[in-house]
Length: 246
Ligand SMILES: [Zn+2]
Figure 1 (cartoon, helix red, strand yellow):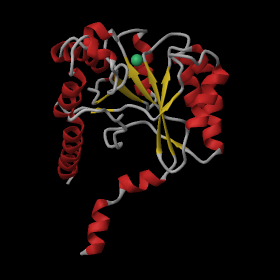
Figure 2 (tube, protein in one colour):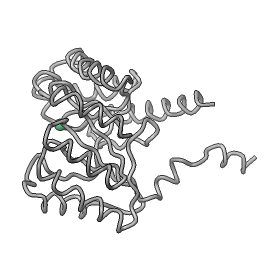
Figure 3 (tube, rainbow, N blue to C red):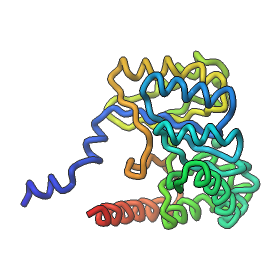
Figure 4 (cartoon, rainbow, N blue to C red):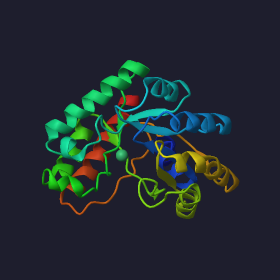
């Protein structure tokens, strides 16, 4: 009985906790001049990644992301905080727009998202108090998984050179865990740091993976009474997903 139980779990989750994994995630694209080069590097290095796309940039790059085996995920259409965080309805209207684009280009609906600013952002409060508590719950109910990050390149902020992007990423990686690395494929310094980051990872025994629906969610802690509720919901939903698989 005991053995069966262990086997049944097949320990995808606990095994992946011990593995040293890097999930490269690229936000805000696609963009000509950077995303295409990033795709070339990923292909040459044999690495899969995740792109949280918007409605900007050329269509063919999103198609290429999907065709080359990367995960195309949703980041919002407009990326404008004062639009998407005004209300739950505004958020989902905006999300529907980028979802339609992805569906048109890849033939598939994306089920993975990242909130602009992450789920713990405080900017959204300026537009609608409590919106993140509502959204983090509502996206799960609508069948999405959302991902924050635990390593940041700071390439949308202070890291203006490829060496600072490289340093920020490599100094924050940890072995024996899932490292979800926040990068922006619209940034030249990120494009220019990518190959060295990948080679550092390979040299230090990390494996690279794209995020899938089964990847355990990495989410920021929020000081909210809703947090407990969200965590309960996540474990309930993943139990249901497990059941559906059988
Ligand atoms: Zn963003």
